[in-house]
Length: 224
Image 1 (cartoon, rainbow, N blue to C red):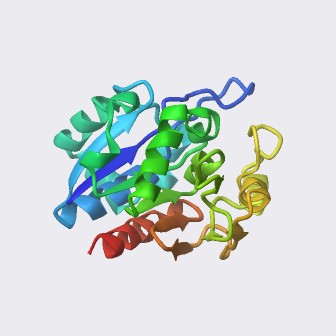
Image 2 (image 1 turned 60 degrees about the vertical axis):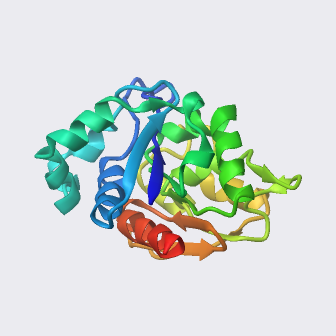
């Protein structure tokens, strides 16, 4: 079982002067869920190498069992520091793909033609593709048979209410919930900050950081 995980390379939070990137728990929880299930994991990002970590996600109050495990895992840290260049990755080599969130993907992966083509390849091949928190943003321009991938599908992702709660409604390039709806997705959400995951066909989406582990388990269920 081979799983590809795609992370952002973008580290600027709009024009705020603050840093962003990927959200630690949204990487570590799925990473260990896949690893402990026996998956062979490959990490990739648009620029390759070390993806930028959203510093807020490494705060003491953001720590979980998986982030603590990662802090003591030299093998995982080395893998993360040496992600493959996304453009050199071939969907045919993997059984499924998973995108962790953080605000970074709103800026780079949503615009990345290689990422769009990669997801389209997984969808056409009927292979599981999962996205958590802000990662469903990367589906904005993804099309299958001329229609948006999310059209008519049950989807979730970081809600407008959650974006408002973190004070970034005016900072992000687009609101994820609005984009999914405008592309024809049947957007649903659970309670703010609580795990909420949807599976529609081979598409898995999770609403927020708390949804990371369950989203990865949903991918494993499809792979099984």
